[in-house]
Each structure stands twice: as C-alpha cells, then as structure tokens.
Length: 79
Image (cartoon, rainbow, N blue to C red; front, side, top):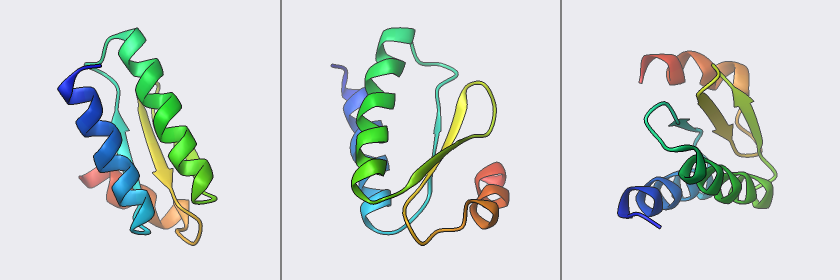
C-alpha cells in the first residue's frame, strides 16, 4: 500500500462522510493500486448510501446520499 493510495482513500472517504461528492482520477494509477482504491472507496460510498458515476473510462464521481449527481457533475468537471 503506497502513501499516495492511502491518501486518496482517506481524503475521498472523508469527503463522503462530510456529505461532499468526490472525484477520483485513476489515469496515473497502476491497475492493481486502482483496484484497491476502487474497492475501498466503493465500500465507503456504500456506507453513506452513496453512488458512483463514471465520468470517463478513468475518472469516477462518488457522491453520498443527498448529493444529486447531476448537480455534482459540472463541479467535478471543473475541479
């Protein structure tokens, strides 16, 4: 587990717990590391009754319950 991987997981889970949507860009992440991050973040998303929306092949928007993915999408694309 790399420091970068832990940081991505913790920051994304913290955003979800705080009721904020989060975007994870997997473009520069090795496949094995990508799988681990995805598993962790999907679990965090499940715990907050959230959802995941693929923005592109390598970018995913995670949103907790109560956050409208359609509203979060334009913000995700500008961040």
